[in-house]
Every structure is written in structure tokens, then in C-alpha cells.
Amino acid sequence: MKSMLRSIALAVSFALLPAPQTFGVALDYGPDQSLFYPESWPSRLVDLANLPNRVGGHFVDQDDSLAFRGDTSAFRAFLDGCTSLAGAASTTLFVHDGNGLFQPQDESRSAIPCDWRLDVINLHARATGLGSNGPMYALELHVWLGGSVNVAAIHVPAIVKTVKE
Image 1 (cartoon, rainbow, N blue to C red):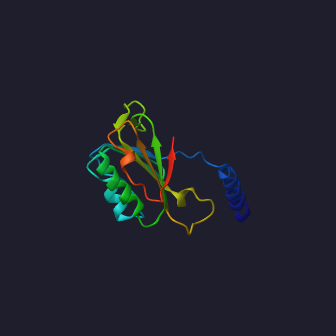
Image 2 (cartoon, helix red, strand yellow):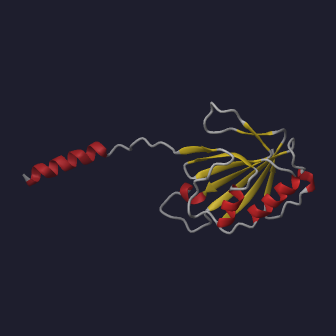
Image 3 (cartoon, rainbow, N blue to C red):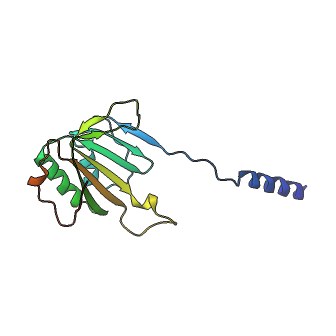
């Protein structure tokens, strides 16, 4: 009897051995909707994400993208907030030509006009192996030259990597 149970357990184990198919988790945010964010987010990041000028956003698995509208001074304050976050590995500023559009995860919904977008990248979730000792998040900030932000009027701190696309 004991060997029969062991054989059944072994057969079940082999049946479960193939890797299961996994699916990502994603959710769109409207301008006034509460965000679902991990407890590991610094409080200042939560404050930035919940600014009243947020026009949309979404998360996919452990990464978030948040879209905003605003003028040059609002963007400057936002950039300063990003660079002062404790626990962030880096902030990269991507400068794009044209006008910003934020596409919700639900592709049946229209793209939303925006002036800038913040992508919060969870580095620990992307790390290989068990655990990570480095910074938890990297921030990617996208701004469009055709919007309400005069990027030329902004002093970008030296710690921010800037990429012109």
C-alpha cells in the first residue's frame, strides 16, 4: 500500500512537472481612480503618482506607467520629485518629438493626450535569482516637445540621464 501511494505521488509529480503557462496581471487607471501600488513604494512616489493632473495609467505585473498633463513648472516640480526619491536606482528622461499619447492597456479605449509619462520599473521583480540587494526601482520619465512643457527652460540635474529620441 505504501509503495502504491508513493507511485501515485510520483506520477502526479511528473504530471505537474511541465511549467504551467503564466499570465501577466494588468489594470488601467482612470484620472480619479485609486492606484494599486506595492507597500515598497516610497511615500513620495505615491504622492507623485496621485497628483491631480494624472490623466491615466496602468500597471502590468510589477511595473507601472502613469500619464500626466501640465505646464513647464508642473513638470519641473515632478522631475525634482523623481530625482529626490530614496530607493530609486536612477531616473532617465526621454525627450520625444511631437505630442504625447498614453495608450491604456485596454486597446479598445482611445489613447489619452499627455505631456509626460512616468514608468516605474521594479528592478527586484526583473532580477534573476532569489532576492536583490540593489535599489528597488528605476524611473523612466518621458516628455514630449509638442505639448505644454518647454523642456529647454528646464535645468535637468546631472544625475538624470537624458535621451533625445
